[in-house]
Length: 164
Image 1 (cartoon, rainbow, N blue to C red):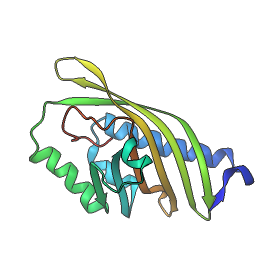
Image 2 (cartoon, helix red, strand yellow):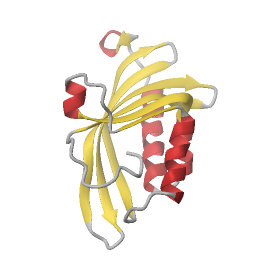
Image 3 (cartoon, helix red, strand yellow):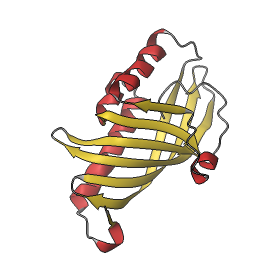
Image 4 (tube, rainbow, N blue to C red):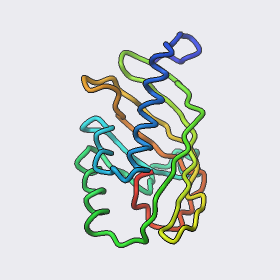
């Protein structure tokens, strides 16, 4: 991969990457969770870890899914087996940075904040941190090969049911 400082990248590529991040966030926020795995390549990796574990290069993740089958299982369990208080998310994704590029593979970083609204109307900041993504060019457009969600806090006050 080539560090961005040594190579010019197109505004079109940056726009396409930002669009992928936005579409994924909107699918989650709009409760179109069955579409979520479609943002990943078939053997894609999704993991959630704390900043503390990430900074120490510790492998422990709060969530670790490999392949779209595991991603689909998470959503199926959410819809049929998990018991949790209904809530919705509103993602704020910004400061998207293209870190490295190679032939059809891009490493990116983006900051996020997620507001959570409970069924009774209470709102709070649920999580904030950064997405570290490896994105691939596929026949179907850009897809995540790996999405690492690095949470600023290791404390989560409820079940991690809905994808972050």
